[in-house]
Length: 106
Image (cartoon, rainbow, N blue to C red; front, side, top):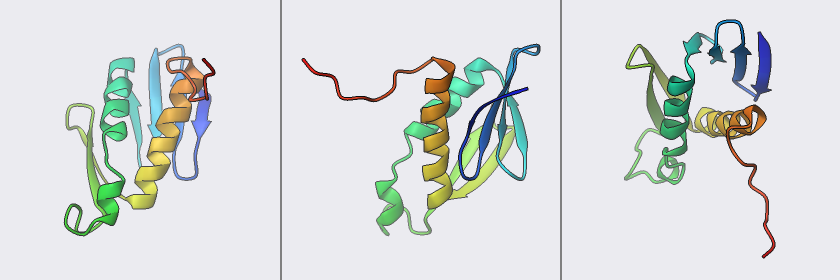
């Protein structure tokens, strides 16, 4: 297995011989296909961090994340959500499936 990216709390690995990805969330490792990894990216990037700082929108500061057709359930605090967003963004750039966010001159 090849490590794609490691953040403070999580790591993303790729197993080329299995055509699978492994997301290590500390207490659990989740095996994912590319489609499931893309779904994870969509879910994570759609989480509003601003809502975690607004008591009316997110009273307790936690996020519930369901992965792989509701097989896995994770409850993340604000710092873990920020770290997971970081892992997803950098992991997809490392895989070559996303473009790095850089200033573009016109």
